[in-house]
Length: 300
Image (cartoon, rainbow, N blue to C red; front, side):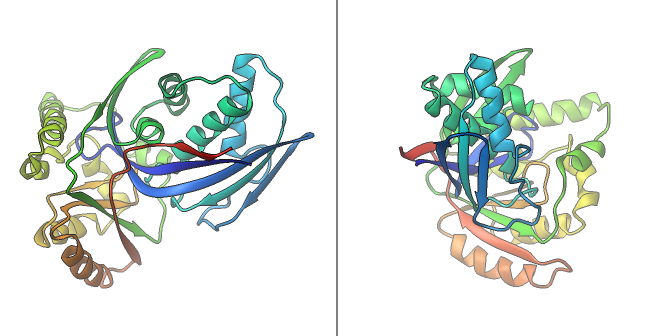
């Protein structure tokens, strides 16, 4: 069977709304094989939401669209999903499905597109490249869409950075998270974010992590989404008190992110886990390193 591994991704990174994301070492594993006809889907791990096991499955739909685009007949497919990326938590679960479907269809069809070409397709499907780019390419990626063209740059990440994902027991849908955003913003808020997004990229490239606390500030989406995650401000304040060099809302939420150096990561984990246990909701904290490979074929 074809075995594909796809990493979780954390989009926006504060100031880089819909444009910047990073891959993390938390993975979905997927196995594919051709069968005579139809689709057979098995899910090995339960999620908070029900994963479709019919033709509405996002991985399968992505494969169908890919075959239609290249003008080939879609074969029957057996798919096994072993998902460790929490769904509807702002960790790129949808992008992981799209990337897995594209890579599987690309391989099984013999099309042999490179990752650059697949990145273009994935960004068009998602509508923004902040999750699909790092899921496919690994690392931290800055991307921009212009009509049907997407440009991106993969940015180096300091080796001593760690990411503490704090995942609550409740989801936030992408649609709900987008519906709370305003239709217009002020010039001051636009300048605020543009300057910090630039600072974020430059600081990562130069290893100047002391800048991250400012660089991850945001006025475009996080202030409006805080109502969906009532504990967000308290958790961010505690995270900074325990040594985080930056904090932000991961994607559309509900996961909150604290960025750390490896020297204080374990101490942060112990103190922050104790703090989270006092919150009204249940929160699970996991320390992760950046993934620099992106989606890979493990075996054929």
